[in-house]
Amino acid sequence: MDIFKVSELTDNRPLTAVAYTIFKERGLMATFKIPAATLVRFLLSLETNYNRDNPYHNSSHAADVTQATHVLLNSRALETVFTKLETMAALFAATIHDVDHPGVTNQYLINTGSDLALMYNDESVLENHHLAVAFKLLQNPDCDIFKNLQKKQRQTLRKVAIDMVLATDMSKHMTLLADLKTMVETKKVAGSGILLLDNYTDRIQVLQNMIHCADLSNPTKSLELYKSWVKLVMEEFFQQGDKERIEGYEISPMCDRNDTTIEKSQVGFMDYIVHPLWETWADLVHPDAQHILDTLEENREWYASMIPPSPPQDSEPSIVTEPQTNPSDKIQFQITLEEGESDDEFS
Image (tube, rainbow, N blue to C red; front, top):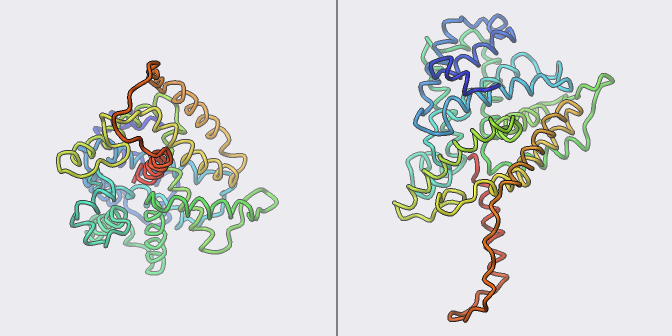
């Protein structure tokens, strides 16, 4: 889905339009007795709390992740796996997962000693903030879309939403992926090919990886859409780098607009983060996601072909006027930088 087009057609209210449509189509409003007016008020209030000045982490991104989560929930291997309540919790988590994002990373907030970092003790700062803002909105009776849930249902929904949104913290990526790989190796399926997930740990693990995949789904879209999203996320990174330069902090990986090759960064991002995640997800729901992997690989090839050639080496021997750096030091720096890039992107 082209969320940019949806944004144009809805007067920059893509999240409200997408989420309302999904809730209605899935029968969630009828099942959980959510008045249409209450849902609209909540979604409009939520969307207002997304920062329109952010190039990337705004309500268009939230709408895109909500739509992606909706699509992944429709996988044949997951048919009838989740209850209606879990499905609603997953979609709710997607809508709120970046609300009131300030346009900078967790590490920036920690490095600058921000109030949010102090409040959440440097632990999943943004993700905890997104959850707090969203549940605070529900305290307004006019926006409480869950007011007709039973107490136990409400507790379950809150737990699922919290567990899912906290899983969007990129520092949790390697743990999530390792657990997902283990699940794939030991997965149990019914005769119809539907996954058997008979406990909360397994079910939330799939839902956490689902929203993580949805959050990192840009490289799986058509090339033109992917390029549009890349332009936006890199501009947001560069704006953070500009702040760091002015404030005297070390510029975060991929945030220096004067020293970042966008094409190369995207190839690395796909190779080390996105492809391993989506490949494992595709194994879990096989064969439902094969077309997604195909698109991802095509986009990877395009970005690889666009990497600018390295400048030619000076053929004339140069006179060494300064002590040479130990080659192993240079390699270690490069490895450390790449690891840092992986951890920071899309936080």
